Amino acid sequence: PKGELLCLLGASGCGKTTTLKMISGFLKADKGQILIDGHDITELDPEKRPVSTVFQSYALFPHMTVLENVIYGLKFQGIKKKKAREMGMEYLKIVDMEEYAGFSIGEISGGQQQRVALVRSLITKPKVLLLDEPLSNLDAKLRVKMREEIREIQKKYEITMVFVTHDQEEAMVLGDKIAIMDQGKLVQIGRPEEVYLHPQNDFARDFLGISN
Image 1 (cartoon, rainbow, N blue to C red):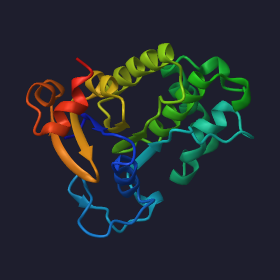
Image 2 (image 1 turned 30 degrees about the vertical axis):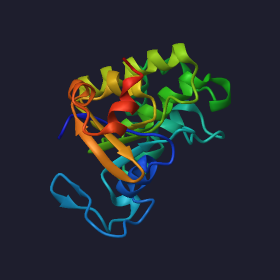
Image 3 (image 1 turned 90 degrees about the vertical axis):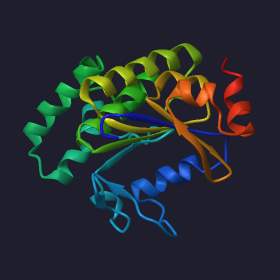
């Protein structure tokens, strides 16, 4: 549903990232349909889809400044440079990064890079924001902080998000709903407490059990 955060949860190799790549268009689906807002996007090229992805590796451009990274996607939407820069500063303000606008990517920390990657994806106003284990490169304390920030931004701007993680606690904290995957299949989908208290099968029970 619109404005919800869905966590795709499962062990490594169960198909979470594959699912994300099909939604974003980097992988072609063998069959079935991908619908966003009632529109079939199954055959659309990645750049024509109303989605944006935050990768595990952040995928920032090292030769560009923080601001240039943030506004990179706007030039494909025909937004003039001056306007784009204004928007970029506005979005950097959301994550308290405006003072780093002129820094190069190598001069900022991992947590700051994560924030830049997040606002770079948000600024193009995607209908769906896809996040592929975006916090796995951060230390434990920073992960918790970034988790809260993502949740706050998601709620405030009512962004529809699909968040891939193999971390049960992360899914329980972040997700409006959790979709548990096992070996390429969707095992169960529901609100965190639903999935936790009423697991559909042994796998769902065992996989979520350790976060009690």
